[in-house]
Image 1 (cartoon, rainbow, N blue to C red):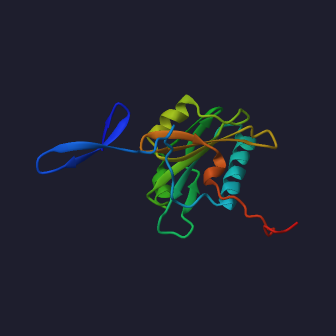
Image 2 (cartoon, helix red, strand yellow; image 1 turned 90 degrees about the horizontal axis):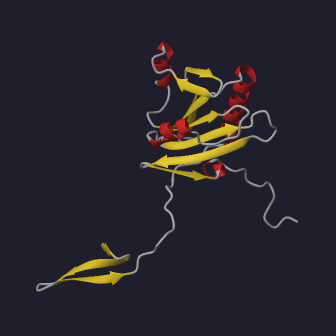
Image 3 (cartoon, rainbow, N blue to C red; image 1 turned 90 degrees about the vertical axis):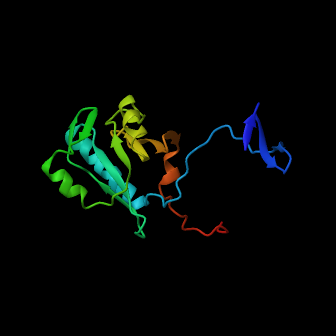
Amino acid sequence: MIIVDDKAYEQVKTDLFTVYKEIDVPTRTEVVPESHGKPLPMSMWLEIMHCMKQSQDKFKSEALIYLFYDVNNDQPWSWWLPPQETCGMTVKSLPDDPSYKAQRAEYPDLMLGSVHHHCTSSAFQSGTDEADEVNREGLHFTIGNLDDPVFDVHFRISLGGQCVELPAHTYIEQSQSPFKKNAK
């Protein structure tokens, strides 16, 4: 396919000529990466949120969790709170910590995202978050307003060098209604 002046053409070769036949190609206003894996289980998401809330209550500082995906497991997701250094609105993992490598070996090879919180501030992608996530593919969640009964969640998916904001529930398992669809 060749694009010329916003029109798509298919190359058609014959014994005597090569011609280009205009073809219809669907257009989009944007492209968004898609994950075809299983969503994060709600029970796991609640554990992660509990960990974030506990870290805020105890340390009043950000905390960081890494997400892992194992394609060979029926429940492929796992999470890890690595050795880290935190101070207020900054957090960084400590890969040189002696326990880091031993702990990391307990998790699948495929690290596929992160969760961190912004304490009592709103959830957003900071400049530091953006720089970290561009080169770290996966699902990236930021939790905010941990002093409020309703936490704030900001979600990005970063795949193939593309980072896109989406609603957080896109990749978190949603609870099924206990009621039949025809219940009144």
